Image (cartoon, rainbow, N blue to C red; front, side, top):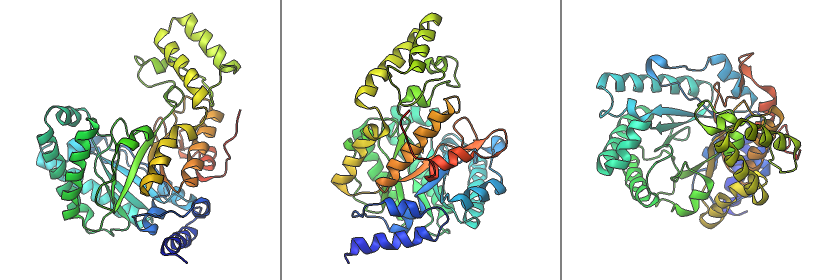
Length: 381
């Protein structure tokens, strides 16, 4: 038995001890990895809890809901921390201290329920402007924020709490490569055993990963986000000024000869929704070459073959405005692809517009859960 094969067998055993996770190991083809298998196993199935660390506007999920999801087989929670709340350029020290206390409280609760957690430094517009305009100041703020976050993370088990250095870096790829290597070096001083999570620029798309070099640090998981085709996943957009707001009832897969697609095109033409119509026509043309999720995600799979580094899709989802059967089909296709390639995944998100919770019952949507956890097989229309 090779050492690599042995490590993956350990991962399989660990997964089989956790409810609903053995299928992830069953579908995996052993490949060399640089992160401990038990850590990768704990990242295999998860969800985002956006809004938990938002001060007076915080909306933490209820303990009962978290218990239900853990029992169903979810192993991981991605916990976005608003960057501007832990950066002293943007927040008073008292506000940062409150955010850090909230993070500590969230970690305690999630640890007690058996979850692994990735702490995600999640910036807003103010930091993103600084990041573009003043690279030195932005890197200083990131390091200072992680110095504070590390103080909260350090007492927790290093194999259960992960550090995601920055969500969706909005700068040039070459600049981010240099910055993230410097940032990882700094964070490693404060968290010597913690697995880091990093991703490329351009919304962390799968087709951005080939331009991103693995870090010298081996204990890193590489995160991509997936919402393609956007015209499907973001239809009925919450912003009425966004052309995607005008697109409704678009099925997945997108096919030119689909009566629903034809009807939508006619409706957009009749309403004079020219921007939305152009986006739809682009999506129809793209679907000829990328009819399913595997074509969209292939660049990341090729990158993994080249570098043998672990990948997680730690954001993906469909707005509830999409046709329900198509939403279920897309979610099932994404998680099936991820599992087949030994990638962890983390659904975006829990209780809001993309949420896996049924807003009518306040409980996990059973169809969504079956799609995510493997009970629903992706099929054609």
